[in-house]
Length: 83
Image (cartoon, rainbow, N blue to C red):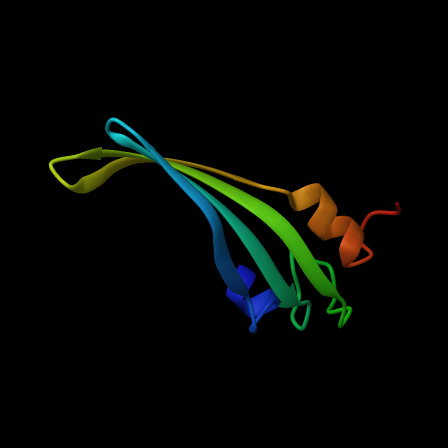
């Protein structure tokens, strides 16, 4: 869904931390709104949002994942929600 709305989507890792069997990752996500997103037509506007992931591992494999993205800021940036 996001790749269709933001074909140039790019995520860069800002920071990582490891605590026992958990890995925490902070990323900076950028892209240009070029396709429909949840009924919002393409705006051509650029986004820049934060993304956080928490990954629990067991035997070197990811067994659980929690993710948090700043969707409110993204919707404001593409003009779907007023500031």
